[in-house]
Amino acid sequence: MREKLTIAVVYGSARQGRFCDTVVNWALTELWAESGFRVVLVDPLQLKGAVEDAAVSEASLEAKIAEADAFIVVTPEYNHGYPAALKELIDSCYEPWHAKPVGFISYGGVSGGLRAVEQLRQVFAELHAVTVRDSVSFSNVWAQFDAAGNPFKAAEAKAGLIVMLRRLKWWARALKVARAENAYGGVTA
Image 1: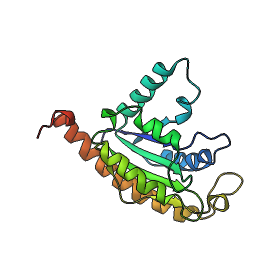
Image 2 (image 1 turned 90 degrees about the vertical axis):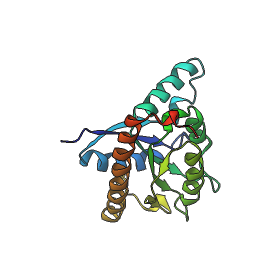
Image 3 (image 1 turned 180 degrees about the vertical axis):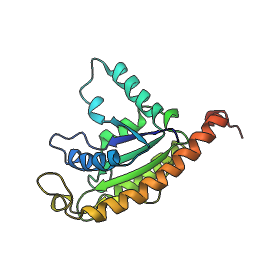
């Protein structure tokens, strides 16, 4: 049997009353139903308001990112971009992102957060991370979930997530082997 992969689910929003919790909770329910994953949560709220223990908070966050074999970033779109809290979280460390795959679940108004995802692809490329093409997107998100947090089009949403997870698993396993064979940071020109 293959070793379980550690997947970090990254919250994209730190706003009070954020809808991100609903989308993450749906994703977690689906992830827990899938075998082969150990799930770690990475939340920008860990950074926000942790002024007294900022070094401890950033060290803890960096450790979670370092232990992950892959990431799913759940992001809203704010003003045609991704949230500042997510950028702060991403920029809180550098090397732990290297040579790891990133998948996206986005949400928002008419674009479903896709503009935020396109910008994040550029950011993760600079971090030497690999973004998977397949993603899940919820346009007009407030009309996509019932009061219990379940998507109205559950089968459609799950189908998209399963495709993304399969790609993410493939990349995570391949890159984990590659990182073990040769430290990525040790590559020279």
